[in-house]
Image 1 (tube, rainbow, N blue to C red):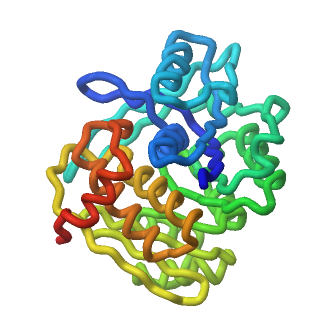
Image 2: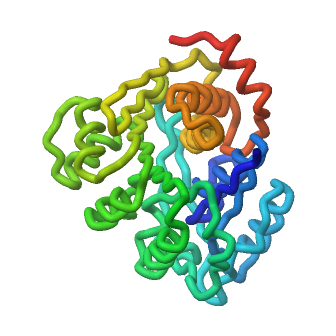
Image 3: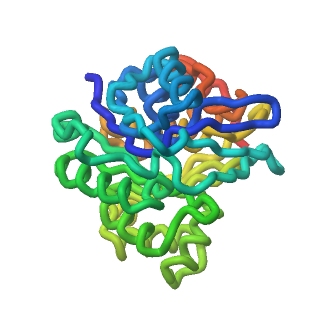
Length: 301
């Protein structure tokens, strides 16, 4: 059965050296879950400018409804300058005070979110009080939905209080291993090893699951009962890692909502993320069948 997945947050243009691609983790998540057969909806905001018009046109081409994307009369559409560093890793530079920082709760259709199976959110959209408060209202309006936090610690785009409040709102956290150690310093965690840090987060913030993605080394997850699951990285023909984490999250959410099986969801998400690294950008089409075949034919490291 199709699941209803709401993604709240930034809709931005990723500016590469060779051009631009529409991005932002929430938009990429909606695109990916739709390709897997679920019903994804994006709540965001763009400017009343040419990049905003182009963004809405691109959403339509991607099969994403723009009905819940607000238009700001003053602030510009989000832009992120991206440089691809070592091992295909992207480095982001995002200007302050953009349209997505001002998502207005008065214009959110709360009937859309109250029966959602999953609410997906991050920290970047919470750098401004307006969008942060709107997110909190949305979370409160959907008490029975699965709250999936994808932590993205962009430079100058988060604070300790935003991180801690986000963790308290979440059921599941997905975090990169390198950002896990930034998180340790930001909120004063005591443990030193990745697995122990993940378990400390579960205990401190009453999380159900913490997922730690480790790039080419794969992924592991721990649940609140202390069960540990791991899937090694795949050997891939690397192009870049833009969108790989979101592709993991989309694949994980798709399987987890349907099966409630952490291990199966982890393996499917890992394969989804790995396949994305063989493409340029975050929205090259990858089908559920391709992911399933890769899980069988792909070679682990």
